Amino acid sequence: MKERFRVLKVISEATGSLNLNEFAQMVGSTSSQTMKRIQELLKAWFLRKIGGGYGIADVGKVVLKAFSPVSTDMEFRFYVALGQPTSFSARSLIDFYEVVKQVDVGSLEFHLHRGDFENWVRIPLNDAELTEAFADLRIAGIAGENLRLEIVKAIEARCGFKKIG
Image (cartoon, rainbow, N blue to C red; front, side):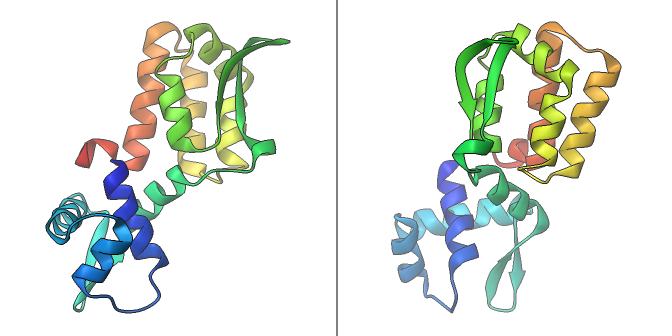
């Protein structure tokens, strides 16, 4: 996934036309590996053909945003209860996604039921769709390992992670 993200990031930052060799060098890969990544991104609808080049599709923009870190003061710090922090924090949605897979489920329950996840994705991440998904989980009263699975599924659905693995 990180290699594909590099391709998306370079495309988003490129200001002019590049030949494949120049582009591959900016990505830090070979031309054939870079072309393979581009094809994977096209197939998953993260990129779209524009004339003789490529542009970032809406889901590609969501993925770029998921990898973009928020400022340190806006990172999400995981707690199990008030005054009981864990050692986990997240500065991006992809960090959050990885932490959710390993943090104690009690921390997930604590934050979900307080609306902390909704607030974090709504304010620093500015993602109304994921905010709504987390609100739905809170309202449904999901708990335990099912909660972890549902949070992971919500993020994967939002970012299209299952499309390209």
